Image 1 (tube, rainbow, N blue to C red):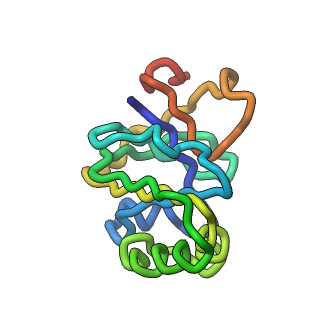
Image 2: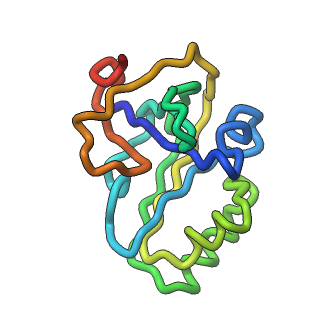
Length: 141
């Protein structure tokens, strides 16, 4: 399964992934929302900045996935802190994710910068920061 993953441009997530100073991606919510339960080891992730440029610029493979059970605020904060070296979050990102009831931690490796390309998001009306696209060729413009 291929996934399009929006990265926080202000926090320089793309640059951190490419440099290798970030190897873990986090998503979380009060309930089980995407990508909870939808990402598997060996899936391919295609990275795009959330700054409106609209181009996939790198890809990587899923090495490990952790889908949490329902957590208390304290358990959630502890999990984020325990993984802070791999997450490399800005203070704003820490505040956004730490404390969520459900967290998904996705370890990525094999990150490669690729020839940038645009995608067609028209089939994804509910714009989220994670799009499970099946095959990237289905959305490549």
